[in-house]
Length: 196
Image (tube, rainbow, N blue to C red; front, top):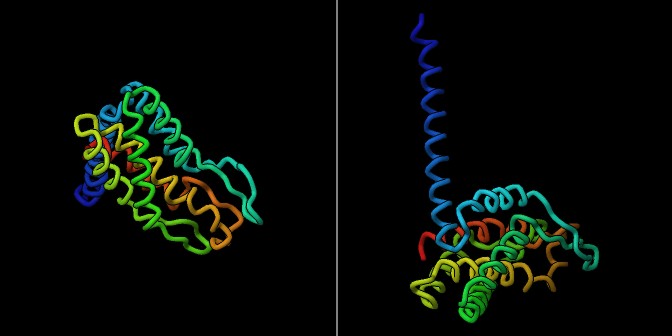
């Protein structure tokens, strides 16, 4: 009689333990990745929290025809501010600009307008392109170059470059750094830090 009741409780305990373990490991990986790109460990949690919570917040900017164009806090504003911080702080501005241009061209070539949804980019494309560009342009200091190149390249190549085609999407709100590119921009910071 006790065994059937104990099994679900034991299973729930082990699943909770597994979830906590995965969370701790992921937070350590994120801390390591952000430290490599140049974010002090004490600010890592704030950047991560702003990115995740901010992905739900769009700030309206202007109208193009019948479509309101907004900027997503987590997918655009936070990466732009972090990239600006790294750009001004580190002496690799030329490499960051060149890397951003290269990633923007690659991302733009593969970005697709999805009517009724937005602009879609393969999730792992910006981080992989950014890691390759970072390693090629600044081998020993690749992570910050990869982060800036990937974040800004994804936003420019997918969203900003396609603004003239906004009418093809056919939705009342388009968000720069929103659902179609958020994954790529967010993953860029993690994968760029780890691969580069």
